[in-house]
Image (cartoon, rainbow, N blue to C red):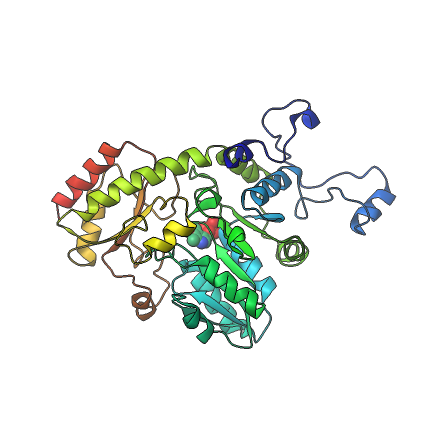
Length: 388
Ligand SMILES: *Cc1c(COP(=O)(O)O)cnc(C)c1O
């Protein structure tokens, strides 16, 4: 079962002097028994560790575990979510290629796409991906990758992953899914036919706001190719200590996600009825435009809520300043409840016109619901809303 895998998969304490917690191999390199052994390892004739940018036992355990959790054959860990995103996109494209993206991506992913276009001539388009037809319209002979975020950051629109995977399979184009907002507990894109899953492990997987890291999972050949090209030679690797912290965070992922989702559902209800709140975007609300897709592909609706408040950018900022318990911070998936204004923070790099197309108004706020007490969170929102 998923909950058991979070705690046990890939680890046998008997191999490590009975150590219940997986050991931290804080080492940069590995000594060979003989020169010939070193030669065999570098030639790929013998498995074993050589140097921590190429592999490390603590990191390998994390990779094995995440592969199991995502129902993938293999996985790789990176020093940040963006190191993971860039390694995947650069591995799947060459000059002249085209990337088809969901309408709305993480702000830095947007920046990366722009840079790849300007520097390397790798173009991209955004598609609402609402129907198969809309998706097919944007595919060109150069399209070498379909890149999807769902729920989309920060509007929480949902893309039907099974539908996108079908199109990808028919056209022979790999489908990459940024699964950060769900974690493997809520959504498993590989099981819906997608090819590569990406996580900013900084968020729910770490879960404690103390690590910046990234993960990818997918089929063996594709992952092996990334391991020996864009990860090895660009070098965005994770430190063994951060991998160790992620293994520790993962143990409580299911417990934490259940509570994040339960609290978010209650707070979404509360915000929906508040007169100073204009619109609430929460995939668990029956009137969310993609409610049925969310029901189909997500175990629960997640821990994030986006909402617009009545007023302008300044009203929204005043509301944030009046919060005491809820912290003003980007990032998400921590034990602490966090609020941010996408237009001025995570998506400030996106030009205003593009932002509007993505549905990001100046009064839109994104709440990452933490693990605190429901009444305390409600009280904090209530008193701040009363002051605007
Ligand atoms: C945070 C985030 C990223 C980038 O991850 P880092 O760990 O900050 O590099 C990518 N995608 C999504 C959806 C994110 O929330």
